[in-house]
Image 1 (cartoon, rainbow, N blue to C red):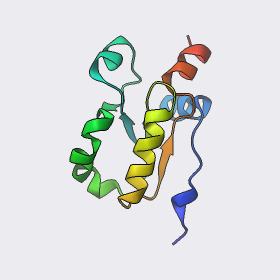
Image 2: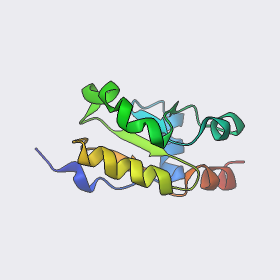
Image 3: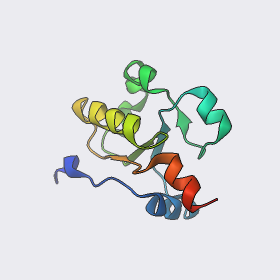
Image 4: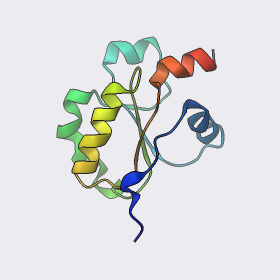
Length: 106
């Protein structure tokens, strides 16, 4: 088994390629509902505060690629750290969050 704990984070460019190719991965937005309503990337909305209560929903995906994102990368960084502690091996944080996405792909 290779150790995926050092899974590199992901840039908006890499994420866009994945979405364009319709690759399969778990995609989680840890922002708040009003932020999601304003702009989203069609990820599953799980606000950071509720993530601990909902991790069991992802038990089957512990070793699959999971991309977490928020507005700028801060909250999703916390989400990534939390998920890794909980035994998820392949969690990647979207660097720059949707702010960077919107700046580059208007």
